Image (cartoon, rainbow, N blue to C red; front, side, top):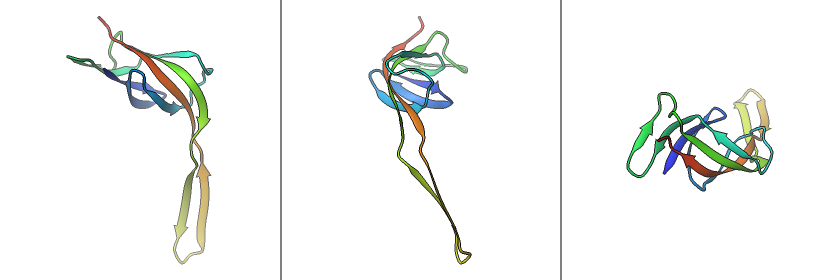
Amino acid sequence: MYAVVNIAGHQVKVDKGQRLRVPRLQVEEGSTQEFTDVLLVSGDDETRVGSPTVEGASVSATVVGHGRGDKIVVFKKKRRKKYRRRTGHRQDYTEIRVEDIVLPN
């Protein structure tokens, strides 16, 4: 069983027991977070697509920790013009573990 969930503006496909990194959430480590913006749920025999969300469906996850991703280097250059700019960026993330996908009756 899997679901497509809207987490912090990103659509993420999740399975039960999966660990994944999502954009940083303002929650404490070890706490449980419930996401109700479920766009699609696929079970063993049927698939439910929401318009825009599936009524009564939710995904619960435990916050494992917070961190920062690898540095992304942004390099701009214009040839023969002596123009070079080098900057970087590290994105904050929250690592979560999906505990359960709840289907409506």
